[in-house]
Length: 253
Length: 260
Image 1 (cartoon, rainbow over the protein chains, first blue to last red):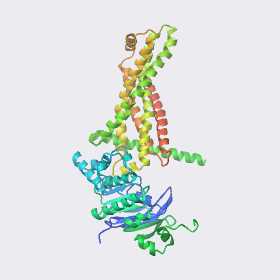
Image 2 (image 1 turned 60 degrees about the vertical axis):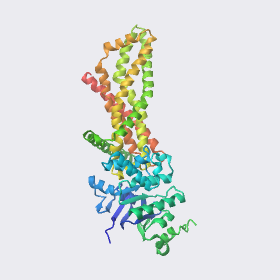
Image 3 (image 1 turned 135 degrees about the vertical axis):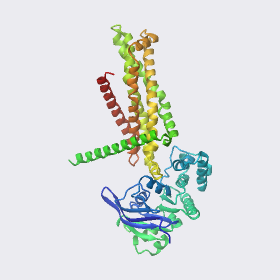
Image 4 (image 1 turned 30 degrees about the vertical axis):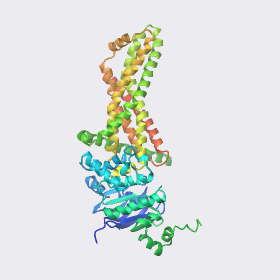
C-alpha cells in the first residue's frame, strides 16, 4: 500500500486561547475522494484552511505529499502550494478578470510559457469543466454553479495532485449540485486527483465520498471515520446515525 | 480599567499590523525595483487609468474653483489698497507650494484611497485574498505594489495639472478686476520661481505612498460582515486625510527651517 498523500498528526487548533479541535489525526489516500463533515461550528472549514496553509495550528503536523506545510516556508512552501488547488465556498474568482485570465494567472506566475501556450492550457482547463465557450466572460456574468466550475478549472491550472473544495454545493440548486458532484467524480477517476471536500450536504456525500471523517464540536475531535453509507447503517454513535439519517434532535422535535 | 486595557490591546494590535505592513510593502517595493519584470505592469497601467485619467475632471473642477475663490477672496480687500496685481503672487505661491499638492492629495484620498480599500476589502470578504495566498502569490506584491506604483506615477502629474488649472482659474477671475492674463502671468513670473513648483511637487511621492498605502492597508484589515467594506473605506479616507495634513505640516516646518 502506498504512503498516504496527506497525513494529519496530533493536530490541535483554536482561537484566542480557546481550543476548537484537539488531537486530530487522520490520513488521506492517494486518489480518493475524502470528505470532512460535521455540524455547523464543528471546525471543518477551519481544518481545511489549516490543511491549505492559511492558518497555523497550536500544535501538530500536516504532511502533504511528504512535506509538512505547518513548518515549511519560502520556496518549500511554494513547492507544496504548487501541488494543491483550492476551490473556495464563494468560488473566489478574481472579479476584475475574465474566466480565461483567472485560469491563466497561476500559469503566469509559475511557468515561463509564452502567451499562446498559456491561453491554450487555460482553455483546455475550462473545457474540462464545460466552460470552453465562456472564456471571455467576467465572473459576474455567469451563474453560481459556473463560477464554481471555473474555480475548479483555475485550481487545476498547474495540474495539482490534490484539490480541496470548501462547501462546493453551498448556494446551488440540487441539479447544479449533482452536476458538480459528477464533475468531481469524473476528475477523480480520470485524472486520479485526490479530493478533500468539506461539506454537510448528504446527497453530495453519498454521491462522491470514498471515505469521510465526522467532526464534533462537543468532543472537539473525530467521532466517525469510514464509508458514509456504512456509518449511516452501523455506527454505534447515535449522533452520527442521526446526522446521516437527517433526523431532528429530540428537543427540536 | 478593563476597557482601557482592551482599547490599548486594540491599538497595540493595529500598530503591530501597520508595522508589519510597512515592512512587507517596503520589501516588496525594493524587490520591484530590483526585478521590474516581477511587477504586474498591466495592473499598474490599469490602476493609473483609474487613479489618474479618470480623476482629471474632478481635479480640474476643484482646482479651477479653488483658483477662483482664492482670487475673489483676496482681490476684494486688496483692491482697497490698489494692490490687486499682487493677487497673482498670492495665488501662484499658495497653489504651487501648498494648495495644489494638498488638495489633489485629499481628493485622491477620498476617491482612490477609498476605492483601494473597498476593492481589496471586497476581495478579502470574497476569499480572493485567500485564493491568492494558496496560489503562492503574495497579496502585497500582487495588489499593494501595483497600486503604490500607479499612485507614484499619477499623483505628481495630477498635482501639476491642478497647479495649472488653479492658476488659470485665478487668472480668469482677475480679468473681472481689469488685470489681463498676460499681466497676471508676468507678475507670477516675477516672484514665483521653479523652486516653489518643485517644493510643492517634492511632497507628492510621499502623498502618493500615503494615499495608496493606507487605502490598501485598510482593505487588507477588512473584517467579515455586511458593513465591513464600508467601514474599511471610511477608515481609509479618515486616516488618509489626517496623515496627509500632518505630513504637509511637517513639510512646511522643514521648508521653513531649510529656508526653502
